[in-house]
Length: 364
Image (tube, rainbow, N blue to C red):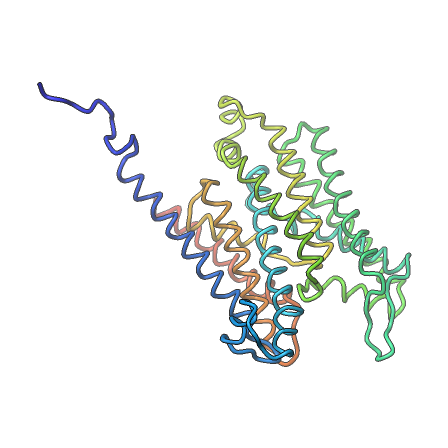
């Protein structure tokens, strides 16, 4: 008697071509992770004082190294590198989710006004609560960084809450969220400019100092907070990856598949806003990472959020770490704020992606 396999696909029910397709995506994710590890080590070795790769490895392994090397690695560069890694991951994941739930390729923490709201909160703390001061050496700094951070966080979350409240009254439509975010971003920018106009020289310099996105201000304590918020947000996003895939197919299709579209959209925006507000409050405004990284990952991995989310987080971390490394080398021994490099790198990349899309469309 001849035995026949009644399964449509003998290899465990999965077509061989689809297996190869998944294998290519997993291989690309592994390549991104390997590149991120290489850049992470490189960013610790370079700077105003170069540290050899061997000394970095010995220090990270707990072996004996000169005291100066230990201070540079553990007190300065490693916290800064981890802050860049976490910020890149968090901003890229938040941008990916915002673009999905809003069904708008321009969705990101920066374009929706959350970063501008945080800047307004920090400016308010500097002006009203006297958060700006000048040191004995003539340097201007923020005298109450935790108070300024708290005000920036509260302002950003208030803007997110207002966007969600407005969209809820309109039925949580993506258009309402985008328009509310653009309007609030413009309002916060105008309010910040007004505060800058009435500020004295020291307050104005302190406001500008905070606005520059810079990971060097992060210590181990800040890294712990950023890690908790970012990793929690990533876990939430990945658990909802299937819902985001359904929403990408259209609201009606998603509802037909049993997805509570309004709830998924609101919770996704809320968690993305929470992660963004925390990152911006501690590190300042870092633009373009949350906008560019999702587009790069989507170009290379497609729109399936099971692969897009980890791909975007790795791409965002890689982009921000590379920018931070370049910021140390461009004007060495002076160090540029990383937000300057992300803008210089992000804007041309985004323009290239825009120019590339029509060509892809004609080729299909």
